[in-house]
Structure formats: structure tokens, C-alpha cells
Length: 466
Image (cartoon, rainbow, N blue to C red; front, side, top):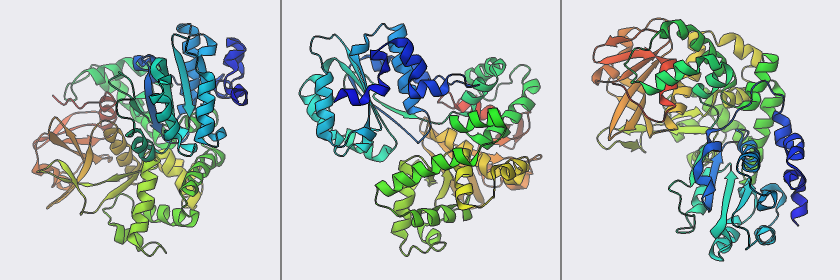
């Protein structure tokens, strides 16, 4: 039975064959930019336990697993026979999964590594994983599970209390590349200034930052075109565009996932069209339903929540300031989780015609602003609860919760910030106004700072203003 997965386990034959001919490693060999995830240095994975890695389609989860296996073989001298890679797409039942793992298990081996990619493809997979954990097979085995539907996977993993091992961290989320990761991948000469931005408080001036700002803004405009998705980044580096083929691959994955949940592609099309029509606006499920042929707001809500669970959307709630939680009865704002998803959706809906037309308009502040706001929301949501503020004098784009308080953040992707557009954020102090310009400036009790500097800083996982 294990022989069916031989193409993904070519290291059983030789390390060199695996490095050169594995379908995922072979694909990245020779690329202009090769990304190495920080998860490759995650020490937790070497402690026996059940680990879950979730993330959207095409963010590089499978490639990461193959790179990790290569590192185990080359740097940790793990015997090839102690490693098994399975793909859920080839496993029809959880019984087949159980039998395959039992065949791999060797009670005389000190340590084994089991990788199951897209485990959510296997019906009732959690039954066999729970059975194998209870039988003691995983006591000396690191089990890494990946999947794209975070809601279903995390719900299933709650059924394993006390069975996941001794590591403090067992759940991981694989994101598209952050802006900081893209900079360090594309232009390594900027890595030192990025490190300094991360290490120091945001309000601190960075030496010679003014000389780097234009280059950072240039790279940010590029990031707005391809986002953090490696296939799109690679296509752009090679061809200065992102082909319709690359975008169609992603859209077809999304349609496939929607169909697996017994949903309609026609309804998906209408929901996405409604989201684009109301983008960056406060919207209720009832109001969003008015753009569609779908009769009930509950159907619209279900589709949006499903798209959020498979890492297509963010649903941003308004902040209840006195509770530091979301306001479920207030209108929401909906964002795509990455500019690449936004562009792929636009092409799917035939809203902008082509990627080249999108690229031509990205230098226009008003056109770029919605993408810019979405990137800020994404970078904040990766590390902390994030909302927007609906106040008496207007709206604040982002409120990030940290240390039992909230920080209001306003995004102003314009050449000159007009004070009259800051009425709501001026109701607070210690807020941040993110701008295109390189200088720091005070607007009342709030500080304007370069938006690109903020994105680099927040990638550290914490906001340190002063």
C-alpha cells in the first residue's frame, strides 16, 4: 500500500534522487527566488506529537514539507525509512489511512516522522488519527498534518485532548509571504534595515531610512500586484506579469473546495461579485444579499464564512471599545486575504479585464487604496485580534488589540494627508496614521509614520510604538 506514494518518497531510493526529482523540489530548483519558511527551523516538530499546519491554497505548505524532509535527511541524519509522506488526495477512506500508517510504524525505531498533506481530503480522517494516537503508535512519532480548511481541521483537532504531545505549540498557520518576507527574498541588501525596523519602536527614527524609503515603496507597489503567493511572485519575476493561467489554477482550487462543501459555483460567483461591489464598505448580510439572486441572508453568510475558513476572505467586525471584542450585530467589512486573491477574483468575474490593466492603474492612489488597506488588515490579523471602528465622527480603518488595549490605525495612501479626514481617529490618542511619505509627523495626539515601515515592523508579531 505504501508503494502507491513512492513518487513523494523518492528519498527511500537515494537522497540525490529525492532532491532532483521530487515533483515539488524539482519545481523550485532553478527559480529566481526560492523561499525557505521559518517553520523549517521550528524545533517543536522534533518532539513527538500531532501538529497541524493550516493555510490557503498555493501558499507553499506541500513544498515546505518536502524541504523539511530534505533537511531531516541532510542535517539531522534521519534514516530514510523513518520518514513517510502521504497525500490525502490518494487516500479514499480513513481505514486506508490507518492501515498505511500501521504498515509504516516500526516499534524498534527510536523516532519516526509522518507527513499527511491535505488530510482534510480523507473522509473521517480524525477517527483513524485518534485511534492511532490511543494505540500508542504516535508515542515516538512526529505527525505533521496539513490542510486548507482551517475551521473543519481545528474543530476536528479539538477531539484529541491530551493526545497531541508535549510541545507548547502544536497549531501553525501558513500565510502567504508578508511584505517583509518578500523584501528579504527579493532584495537581500534591504534585510539589515528591515531588521532594524523590527527591533526598534515604530516612533524611533531609523538611520538613513530616507534613502531606503523610495525603494521600499517601489517594492510595495510590486507586492500589491502579486501579493505573497509564490507562484505569482515567480511569474512576475520571470515575465513582469501574472498570467491568467496562474490565477485560474488558484480559482479552480477554490471552486473545487466550494463544491466539496456541496455549494454552488453560481452562488460563489454572485457572492464574490457582491463583495467586489461593496468592497471597503460597511455592509450587512442583508444588504449584501440585495446584490445577488440568493434569497436569504443566511446563505450569503454561510458562503462568506466558508470562504474565510479556506483563507480567501477576512470578515472584519466593528469594535466594541469597552469590551475589546467584535460587535456581531453591526455591519462588517470584507477583505480578500491577499492582493493576488483579489486580482484572481477580478479576472474570474471579468471586472478588470486583465492583469496588465490592473498593473497600469496601481500607481493611482485611489485605485491602489483598497488593496493597501487590505494588506494592512491582513498583516495585523496575522498576529492579533483586529477590527474597524465605527464612530460618531466616521470610521477608523483598523483597531488592533494588544496588551488589553486597542490601537486605532488609519490608512492614508495619498500624497498629502488632509487633517479634516482624520475626525474619528482624532477622538483617540496614540493612534497611527499610515502614509506614503517617509517622514514622521504628529496630527494632534496621533503619529503619522510610513506605511511600509509599519508593515515591516508588525511582521515581528507585536506592535511596539514607543
